[in-house]
Length: 174
Image (cartoon, rainbow, N blue to C red):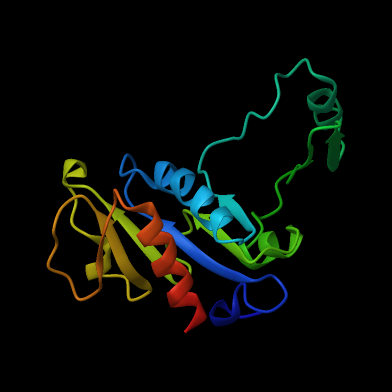
């Protein structure tokens, strides 16, 4: 599956949320999720981190199983389940491989993966002191900011999550 086809087909649509650290990507996604739910859409989220993931304290059973060499550990309760897959030095899975592991949804929001060739919205704040990524990334289709920016893509009000959710859905349905 090439980059241009990432996430389309049975996995639903994929849309990236990118921006510099501290710009408010996670907060925006947190504000978008209830808007999508209100519109009757199911949404998955993939969050990319460059750091090690500490999902459970080392003394917990699942962490002990992973430390002892399990390739995958599934932890289940009446409230949720999680699968932790240890890479043991293998390459990090591609975005397409990660999408394939998720349950079907109408939309998957991806935080991070800013080099992927998927449609993206940049969260931009002057406080980061950095220029907009939209000037150099042709896959950024809009910017959400509290500032008024003069860019070649639409600039959405970061404080209007309903309007941002509507823009994302409209874009993906084109």
